[in-house]
Every structure is written in structure tokens, then in C-alpha cells.
Image 1 (spheres, rainbow, N blue to C red):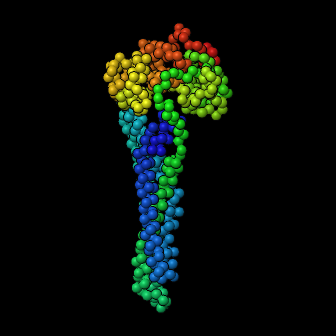
Image 2: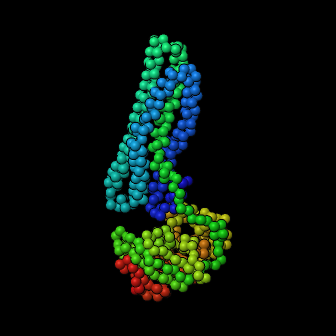
Image 3: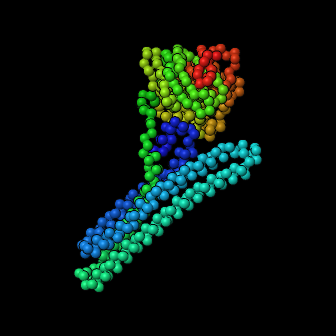
Length: 450
């Protein structure tokens, strides 16, 4: 589960789905066959090698030493092929990830491709990526076969050379009988065979070096406090939120330079052109992006600093809805932490309880990507998640941009009706909307009053 856990905690986890799936499907299978299985086989072959070694030494030390020295010839193979094996394995793994990403991208955009009759070009692209992956797999398999061939040749030499030397010693009447030489020769088979296997196994283990480095990464996990799994009856009141000397570089816009203080039960609107960095500001406040310089400080009503991730709800313009029930989407699979009464309460507060069918609505399946819900209902599910956990601050990222006027008005009325501060970024807001406590514009990387 390490890859899966890392996938959750990456800053850009939302855009790394294909990479994580590739890790779980392809790389984990490679780890199983080339590393874990090889480790167990390595030990068994080493045990056979040791038993054969002691038996040969018991028969005749000098001749056995010659056989043993030559037996280590196949062990040179991993050294010879290590660099190429690492390179080809890494190329194959990356190519697999690219293939999955391409297929996922083309399938999700299939409607656009059909609309403009470009399916053939898309299929050509997928064929090209598939061909590249197969070529990388061929190169890896070919290199493994080459390594095994060289190991077999070296193993043959390690048999023949000492046997010829042994026959010469017999012809010179040196103290060794043919029966003893034959016994050592046969025992050497149980020495060279395991060594050849060990050589191939080490090659396979070496090929997983980069994957193992990825696996032992320690994901930064949020500390879970058992008390936080229970619904709170009251909010922690935020007295101020400060953006202090924050600098954040942007590729296609002016770099962010932020110094601002939000006080009291603020209801703030931030406007600005697309790509100016509005969402980046929310991500910095949320803590999912870390600026090179500066920091965010949230202070509660008694003057203590709040844990930022625990205090904040993030309302995205495209909230993710799991292919599960309304109950699971609200509790996020922590069903035991919330009572049915509390779930009904938050659904009523966002006007969803009756709209979704009353008492039976908790069992309603939302469908894949929330297809059984309207855009406005998905947004209200996101708000209900935050209400259920008594978040102290709402960050609203273009939450109404994809909604009609009626649903947009409904969402905004819910937000203004909460006794909780929020910061909303949006392209367009009705100029007659005067319920915001502060309206700001992102201009040349700085927040200025409108």
C-alpha cells in the first residue's frame, strides 16, 4: 500500500492518478516477480551452494578450490549487466506509466474526439505509445536473455576448465583418483547451478533498485486524532488569517507576493484573470502548496494558532464524488464516526434532504463521478462534508462557475448563511452582490482592493 499512500499525500496527487495506478498494477507486479520471489530463491540456492561446497572440500581440497574459484565466474555477469538492466527497467516502467496516462486521457476525451472526427489520430497516438512500451519491454527482455546466455557460457567454462586440469593431474599421477575427480565434478554441478541462479537472481534484484527507492519513501501523513472523528457541535471561531511575506513563483503569470490580513467573520471575494494565481492562493492557505518564502497564520478567538489543515474546507469547482452512496460521500467512509441524525441535519442545512428523496436519500448511489447528481447537488455535497466536520474556514474555488444562475445563487446563499468565514475566488460575480466584507483583485501578483 506504500505507492497508494504516497499517491494520496503527493502535493500534485490529483494529476498523478495514472502514475499511481501504474505503480499499483505494473511496478508492484515487477517488484513481486523480480524482487520478492528472487529474494526467497536466492536463499535456497545459497543453501544448496554451501552444502555442495563443504562436500567438495572434504573430498579433495586443492582440486575443489580450483572448481570453486572457477565457479565464481558466473558471478561477474551481474557486474557486467547491472547498469543496462537498471536503465532498461526504468525505461520500461516509465513507458508503462505513459501508456496508462495516454489511454486514460484519450478515453476521458473520447466525446471531443468523436465530435471532431479525430478518432483515427487518437488511435494512431495510442498505437505509437503502445509500440514504444513493447519496444522497451523487448529491450529489457532481450538484455535479461543476454545476461542469462553469458552466465550459462561462464558456467560451462567453470565446469570444463577445472575438469581438464583434474584429468591432467591424474595423468601426472598426482594424488587424486578419477573417482574422486568425478565425484567433485558432479558435486560441482550443485555448486555452479546455484551460483548461476544466484547471478541471474541478483540481476533481477538489481533491476528493481529504482522501484525500491520509490517504495521506501515515507509519505507525509496527517496525524489523525481520534476525537476529530466525532462531529463537533460548535465551530472554532477564527479571529484572523494572515498571509505573511509570501512569495510563490508562477510559470505563466506574475509571481505572487502576498501580505494581507483577514479579520473577524470575513466573507472575501478574490477576482482576477484566468491563470493569475487565484487558485494557487487558496492552495497555499489550505497548505497543499508550500511557498518558498513566507507563511500562513490562522488565529482563533482566544489568540491561539489553529492547525491549518484541520481548520479548512476546500470547495472545488468540480468536487469529487465517489461512486458510492450519499452516506459514504458525506462520511468519506468513516460511517461509525457520524450518526444518522447528524447526516440528515447537514443535508437539510444545504437543502438536499427532501430534494434527494427524504429518509431514503442516504442510500442513494451517486454514480461514477457523481453522474446521478446535478452540478448544484455535487457542490452542496461538498459543503455538507465541511459542515459535518465543523470546519472553521471555507475556501471556495470557482464553485459556481459551472452552475446556472439559480443553483449559483443557492450555493452562495448557503455560504453567506453560515456563521463561518470564507474566501471565494471567481471570474464573475453579480456586481450588485454586496454581502462580501471585502472584495480584492489579484493584480501583478498582489492583492489589491477593488
